[in-house]
Image (cartoon, rainbow, N blue to C red):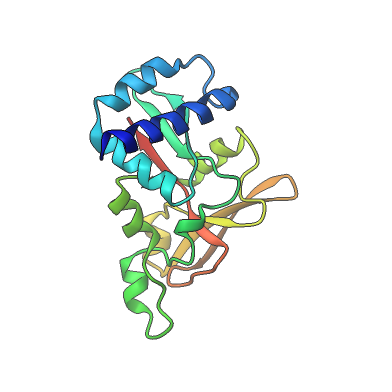
Length: 181
């Protein structure tokens, strides 16, 4: 990443961090920036999150390791990560009208993790997300082995978890990611 791109990313992340202090009480931007500047791969992942519409922000810090957790905090599922089936097996199972990719593979390429259902519910305590869209979440193997995958959204003031065939994809369904730095 070029210095100018890095500086622009850090400026955008800092502005979002300062605008949303309720997401990371007790965390100082200087500590976050120092950790980011010493981790080029994290910067690349955050840039990918930003470029696909995720609006990543710090949502916590691990007390034992000191790692900061970044999560996509865009109001709706990131626009650059929609219309994807769940994983490679689901993509390969489609005979026609294949989507361009899968959520699990795209997350891996970006260097981030899909949220679990529990992490998704925790994120929803910090704001109201996916009021019009939905997001794939990490699916337990027992569900995935039966051909299904899980997704979540927020409607009627509540967070819902649903299931669908893993090979399905919709224009309003994407995925949110986490990055530990």
